[in-house]
Amino acid sequence: MSLYCGIACRRKSFWCYRLLSTYVAKTRYLFELKEDDDACRKAQQTGAFYLFHNLAPLLQQSEHQYLPPQHSLLELEKFLAKFGQDAQRIEDSVLIGCSEQHEAWFALDLGLNSSSSVNASLQKPEMETELQGSFIELRKALFRLNVKDASLLSTAQALLRWHDAHQFCSRSGQPTKKNVAGSKRVCPSSKIIYYPQIQVNLRELEAAAWFSHDEVVAALKRDRPYAQQQDGTFPFWLPPKLAIAHQLIKEWVEKPTCPSLPA
Image (cartoon, rainbow, N blue to C red):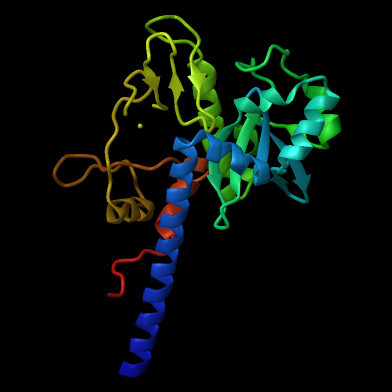
């Protein structure tokens, strides 16, 4: 029994170490792409692009669910050329993640006003016909996407929305310029660097706080999320089960954890 337990523990430690090692490698790679424009442009050559139109992702129906198609840089360039757009439009894309094999993933919105191209935004019906898909509001499509795609597209939508709202400097009024990855915007006039919102916007949220893994687990198990506790306070509650936020939190809780690593 002790030998079996020892083997099981070593196997668990090995897989925990492997998961952590993969996560660290991906994080380092993404950080490099965010800081190095040349490295990010190189990653675009072999990366995959997800397309949006006015913040609605391009989706294709497969049986009872939606799938977001990926497009290579070459496919995207051919598509843009067919619709009278130059490849400079790709400069509006943003980095949203990568695979374990370090294939970079980007998102590009073809419906928003372009900050890098003089061409007008592309028309939705013609694009849908060419791309054999539909641009569907993310809220309407969430429950027909798998958790991984829903999380990735939500990240992409939030970042695209942020860039669309920060094209001008709040101090100088001059146009800001994004780096290749889209991890920041810079005003050439005032030299101010803008980053996506990491702090609480009190106009959008009343409050925010950090919670431990155990607290979140307890919240998921709670039958009466609004019930008052013995000390008179109310425990924090999670979004309803049908909300994508609830599913993302549940996925985070159910992921294997690694309490310790082998020496």
